[in-house]
Amino acid sequence: MKKPLDEDTSWELFCKKAFQQENCPYPQLEKVGKEIARLCSGLPLSTVVIGGLLLNSTRSLQFWENVVRNIKSSPIAKEKEESLDILSLSYNHLPPHLKPCFLYMGAFKEDSEIRVSKIIKLWIAEGFVRPKGAQILEEVAEGYLKELIDRNLLSIRNHRHNGKIRSCGVHDLVRDLCLKVVSKLPSSVSNMWNMQSLIVILYRSARVVVAPIEIWKMRQLRHVKCSQIYVPDPPPRSNGLLMMDNLQTLTRAVNLRLSEKVCKIIPNIKKLHIDYDTSLKGYDDSLIECLCNLDCLHKLESLKLSIKVGRWPTQDQELHKMMRFPVSLNKLSLRSCARPQLNKIL
Image (tube, rainbow, N blue to C red):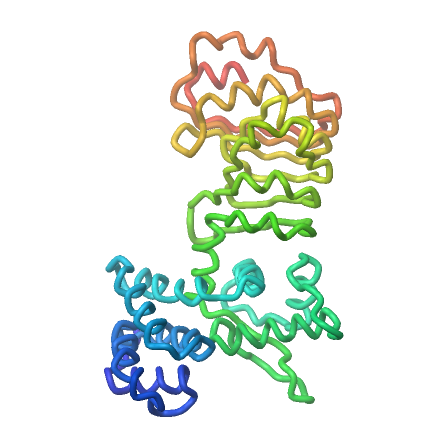
């Protein structure tokens, strides 16, 4: 583990990032600035990222004092978690148009060198980039990329011969921040009206991604692929108003309540992978409802059920007699970590 920066070096690094010079040119901000640098605990990445945040923020004493309060309110934890708490301030202060672009970077592998042309194509395809004046979308996306680099959330790896950025990368801790934040999708995700694929893979964590109820409004979604995702029930008064008829893939949903209503909302689903686990959010006998309604999915081709329940209700011992699979099904995988009677039923 690298030795933390001393106080003087931390302050010098902070000034270079927050003011782009080696000292503070604003006397009224020097005291609070040194407090912020000290609270970064000598961690270079935290100092750099917070400095980048303040470089692009207002120079008011009130705003800087608010940053101090936010850092102090973070729970004291081990070095890595403390760094993530500090880095999260930078994410919280990102403009709305940059947040989805930043979080998307968590989809790339650790230490990978990512071509700028690839990032821009993906951002545009996902609908993250909106027209701006006479600029084409690629030019707008390049502006987004530069903003993230200026905030020290992305780093430049290589340049082209013409001076433009060829590739960039994401520091491991910054990538961990991306993964920590998509573990709970914001309701604003539904504003990405053109999104067709939602992919969230948490390589280092067993956390379940929690989707907002607004996900049911995303009509353009075709593929949802996650390590594990909990999708809440649709809004109660939405009969006939919600329709996700483009959705073809949903993997791995946790304790999905496959009611008749949900089956009508996703009529064209082709690939479905559900984990049922009493230890995870929203179980409440949702497995029973799934087994009873599977045959309502007339386009379903591939089904995978992973079942981990510690108790099988005695009144549902005959449930297997009611089970009906759709005739369209051509691939079935059942995995049970439950009691013997459940294995017998399946």
